[in-house]
Image (cartoon, rainbow, N blue to C red; front, side):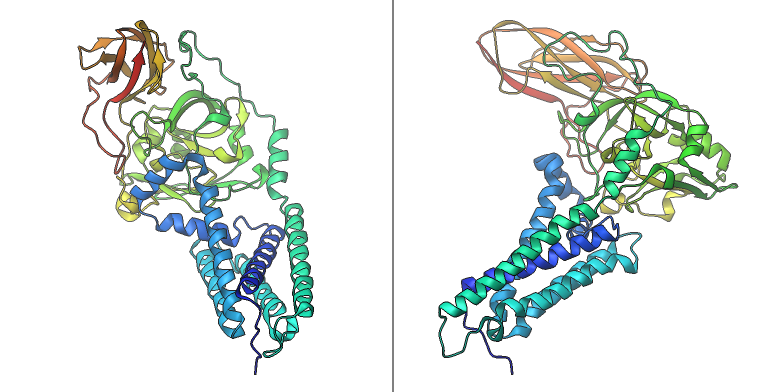
Length: 509
C-alpha cells in the first residue's frame, strides 16, 4: 500500500508544478529533436483556435493584434502548471489521483495532436515522452518514501532537506533540457539561413511618383515587411526549405501538376503592387498593407492544368493544414493573382509565407491569401468547407470599398484654423474614384488623391478643413470607379467585412 505523504500543501503544489515543467521541457526537446512543427502546447493552442467561434476570434484579434498567439500559448502553459500543482496536492494523499491528472493532460494533448492536419505517429512521441516524465517525476517529489516523511513523524528538517534536494535536481534537469531543446530546434534557423542566401530575380519596386503624399504622420504608401499585418492560425510558423517545397495542382483538371520552387523561378516572375486586407479589419483598422510582390501568375499555371468546365473554386491548403476556398474566376481573370516568392524585393519572410504564398487582389485574405502554400485543388464550392467558411464567414469575400483617417488621430490636439487631414482609401481591383470628408456633420468635401499604378492598391488622400477652437468630429467616405458610394451603415466584420464611415474626434485650440 502507498504511504501518504504529509508534506504541506504548498510544498506539494510546488512539487506538482515542477513535475509539470519537467514534462513540458522533455516534450519540447522531443519535438525539436524530431523536427516536429508543433509542440504539444502549440497543438492545444491551435485546437482552441479551431474551436473558437469566428466572431470571438475577430474580437480577440482586434484586442490583442499580433500578441494573440503568444498570449494563447502562454495561457495554455499557465493552465498546465496550475493543473500540475493540483496533481501534486492530490498525489500527497493518493499517488494515483495525482497521476490521473497528468494522464488526463497527456490525453488532451494527444487528442489535440490528432486533430492537426498531416499528423503522424511520430507527432505523438513528444506527448508520450512528456507524460512518462510526469509519471516518473511526480512520485520522485511527492511520495512519503521519496521524501523520507512518516505518517506520524511530522515534517522535520531531514524531510525538508530531502525535498529541497530532489526539487533542485528536477529544476536543474528541467532547465538543462529546456536549454538543450533550443539547440535541437535548428530547422527554423536552417531555413532562415537558406532564405537569406537566396538570390531571386526580383526587384524591390519603386514607389510611383505622386503615390506618397506630403503630409506628416501619414502612413507610408509602401508597407515595410516588418510592419505588414499578420493574421493566420499558425501558432508555430512552418519552416519549409525552398529546395524541399512542392506544390500540387490537381482535382477537376485535365493535367495535374507538381511544381518545385525552381519550376516557379524558371517560368519568370511577374511583379505588381498589391494591397492586402483582412476581413477582420474594423472600420478605421490597421489590418491592411500594401507591398511590391514578385511571383508567378496563377492564371498561367491553371491554364496548364486546364480546369474542367463545371469547376468554380480552388481549395488552397497550407503546410500547416489551413484551408480557404477561392473563386476560380478570380484566379484566371486579368488580375495579378500571384504565387508570390518575394515581398518588397526580398524572399518572403517566414511569417508571411516563405517559401510561397498566394496573393489575390480584391479578395479578403480568408478566401485567398494562403501562406506556406502546398496544394491547389480545383473543385466546386458545394464540395468542401474551408477553415473560416465553416465558422460562419461568407463563401466569397470581395474586399469592400473603405477609407480611413490617419491624420489627425482620434483625440489628438491641433492648432485652430486650417487643419491638414489625410489617410488612405481602397477598393481593390475596382479602384477609388474620389474621397470626401466632412466636419461636424457638414457638407461632404472632395480631397486630393495620390497617384496609383493600378486599381489593386490603396490610395492616399489629403485635404484641409477649417476648424474653430473646440472639439470636432471628422468623417471620411470613398466612392469607387463602379459608382458605389461607401455606406455609412455600421456592420460588424462577420460575415464578409465591416462597413461604415470612419470618424475621429479631435480638439482644435
